[in-house]
Image (cartoon, rainbow, N blue to C red; front, side, top):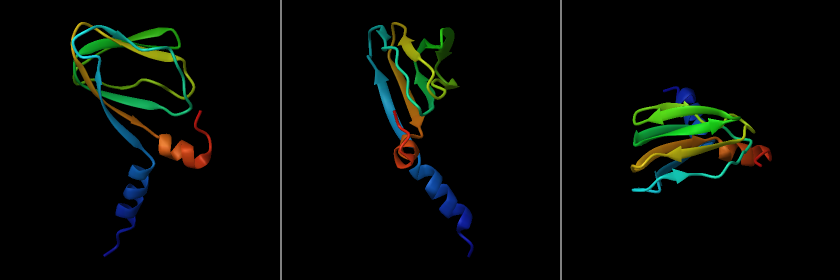
Length: 102
């Protein structure tokens, strides 16, 4: 049986990091402005708020999927007065391997 496609997907998964985040449950939250070389994709399970990327404001809510940090863009996110649960996916392991993570 040819498993080359499956092996490729394993390599892709190894190049990503997955974080399940509860952002300051029960109170407003505003994260610091920051940037990094890797992109960040966020899926919001619960809550609402907004992200600011290079000065542009993007609202988000539960069930939204967004590219919240295109490479090296200054960004932050803020939650409203409710619990926020999200899954963040980044290609940090790939950047570490390439020596390009800042």
